Image (tube, rainbow, N blue to C red):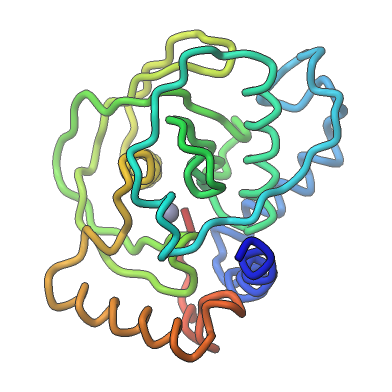
Length: 237
Ligand SMILES: [Zn+2]
């Protein structure tokens, strides 16, 4: 099954490349690699423990039970976590996507990474909590774990997110619109919630039919998306 998923990820790579935002993300990744050296990776400035080679993970796809579990809090922030975060960032860039939660690579821990293409580069949040949310904002969302499909979803426009960075420092961020959307999507992954659960009843039924059709036709094995299914610019998270 893992081998199948690995093959699947390769397929996604080709099919998800259409998003301008996502493209921007992967361009950043290339620039990032060209302009940083080990020990100065942006997310771990001057970090001495980032010397091991970075590897990428297979992204778990809809139907995998790991995507439906509530992930556990992280108790110890140590070097191992730093390495996992670096691998998650690499996996996110390779997909390409703008956010990735640990359960999406089969790790049931409350951690996600993101890069929304601003000057700040990739970031990781450990044990995130949304303490406040305000307003409504409509946005078209895609998910790396439900490749090739996207829906317009209304969620709160602003959120207040707290958590920790990988050095264990407290983080408090007021996020609006796009960044707020990324946080909400990744938080959902940590609670075992997928985009599909945010759809109205009829849209969800239709989505389930599409996804079941894929499983029967074997399309999932080739990466999930039907040819031409992702024709618009939608960031995958
Ligand atoms: Zn997602």
